Image (cartoon, rainbow, N blue to C red; front, side, top):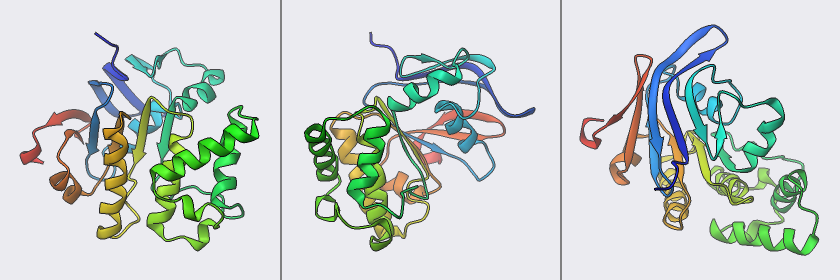
Length: 227
């Protein structure tokens, strides 16, 4: 049986000395789409930060895309992040560069230098999110939904083993949220594993899937209808 993409056992997550989540045990298998829900302040962001190396895992066991979290070193973090695609609520695009240049910047930073391959990869990911026609627009010329599509394309650049989407529809209106969700669903159908933190329960009802909940310093799986 293949290794889970993400695995935690009896893990405790801290922000400095503050215990945020305790005794976390869960696994995410290759190809799954998993929601992470919970009220503001219940630890969703701290959990996500632990997964991409912003917070250390000092207690318990954990591995993500082949990296052991408790023994993760500073030097490992850039390599870990190349195997992860992270989508943020506020897009984090560079406003002084075109969509194409935003994506090229990431590829250059992660070791790509063949111009033809870079161009092919950028066209490929923009195609996946239906944004090829906007390649030479600047982020400020795009709607929120379009910016988030570009952010998803950026997350796909290095063919990540896991996409961490942290409130990707948090700044979007309901209709645009559905459009972005359709993109994520399509990407998942093509084999990408996705863990998505969200407040948007309407999306959970429209696109039911495995759901983890943060509550009372715990993370546990919930049955969809009790959400």
